[in-house]
Length: 113
Length: 114
Image (cartoon, rainbow over all chains, first blue to last red):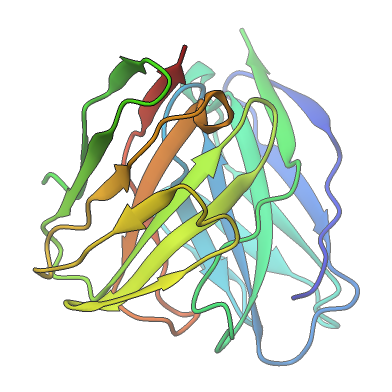
């Protein structure tokens, strides 16, 4: 599975957009980009995923560059409850590990008042 | 709107004791997973199941057993608890193995072995 690189930490002011970058330069054509987050003491929460096109749902937007080597998760109006560790994960379409998710160190997002 | 439910939320065991961590999902998902997360670390896959009656080992299966008699339930059993099994355990489920199907997680069971 392709490796991802994320900054270890970021700050964001409450009400502003949070833009979380992820590099996945070795991604292959059949690999999806997934974002999860983990709020302290809770289970990982699925946010969004995409293959090539930009995606948007009620939680966030995912912007994938044209060469697919990097992506950005956008939380449009961050709140204090968005403070969490955000994980960018690349998954092949079909994995010999049958869907195992590989969580790296992620980005700790601190939303400040 | 329950999703994936894990019980208990917390438990303290003595070395050598056994227990079963319960996991149930109401989304009619075929695939279910057990992960453990040690402090400051990522999740590691213990066991997974692709459907009722079918289970397989993940990365760190030693010391654990699972069963999958129904689509909804996927219990994880510790037979002889050891301090190295102190961790937070997460159960997850997904519709299938296709990467277009996200996994959904429970809130975890925090287990301490003393």
